[in-house]
Image 1 (cartoon, rainbow, N blue to C red):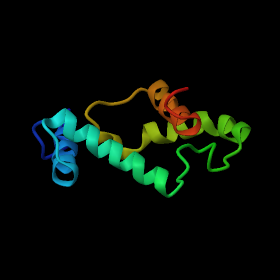
Image 2 (cartoon, helix red, strand yellow):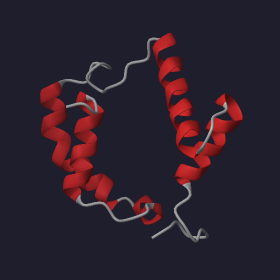
Image 3 (tube, one colour):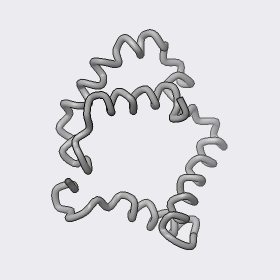
Image 4 (cartoon, helix red, strand yellow):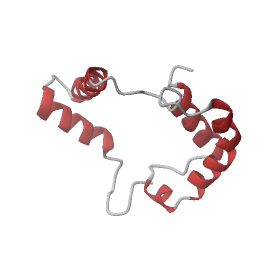
Length: 104
C-alpha cells in the first residue's frame, strides 16, 4: 500500500528523476544506476564505512541485540508508509545486511 497521500509507490521514479537531473541517462533504469554509482563514488572518495562492522560495532553485541532491534523496528509507526508491511524476519535480514554488507 502506498504512503498516505500517494496513489502509487513512487520512490523508483523519484530516484530516476534525481539521477537524470544530476548525471543524465537514457531511461529510468539507467538514471537510477548512474545515481547509485555516483553515491558509491562519493562514499569511496571520502572513505566512508559501508557497514556497521566497518564502523567498529562489536559483532557479538550486535548479534545479542539483533532480536530486540528487529522487533523495535517492526513496531515503529513509520512502517505505515512502507509499500508493504515487512515481516520481522525481513527486518532482521536488513539489519544483518547493514552489519555485514549486502553481499553476505
